[in-house]
Length: 123
Image 1 (cartoon, rainbow, N blue to C red):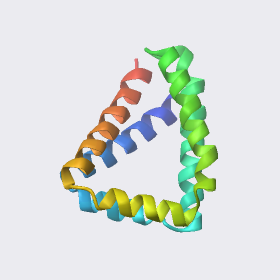
Image 2 (cartoon, helix red, strand yellow; image 1 turned 120 degrees about the vertical axis):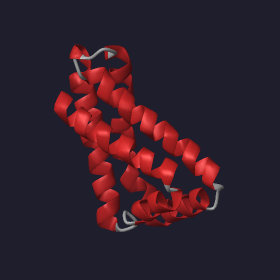
Image 3 (cartoon, one colour; image 1 turned 90 degrees about the vertical axis):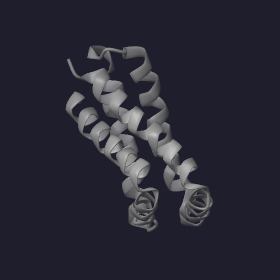
Image 4 (cartoon, rainbow, N blue to C red; image 1 turned 30 degrees about the horizontal axis):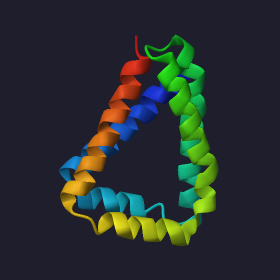
């Protein structure tokens, strides 16, 4: 499961880096998930990441942190389909209407979180 956390952590970090460098491209990428299949795919990724984090926690550098974050990510994955496409679109429109610095700041958090996951589970 540590490999799953590393792969998804690197993917999250790459998306964060994209958002820091080119916020409009990150928004365009996220808009691709504005379909029923995209919403379920995003939920599935969150579920897999949550389970992988929880499972990889005992052998990680930060087992308690990974365990708690894994539960939160799993819950986010469970609730994602209930968000619905309309709310997702409104949320994305609100987020995209913010300044590029706002988007870059959140993207930097995604970059840091992805790298933290990789650091936590690699020996």
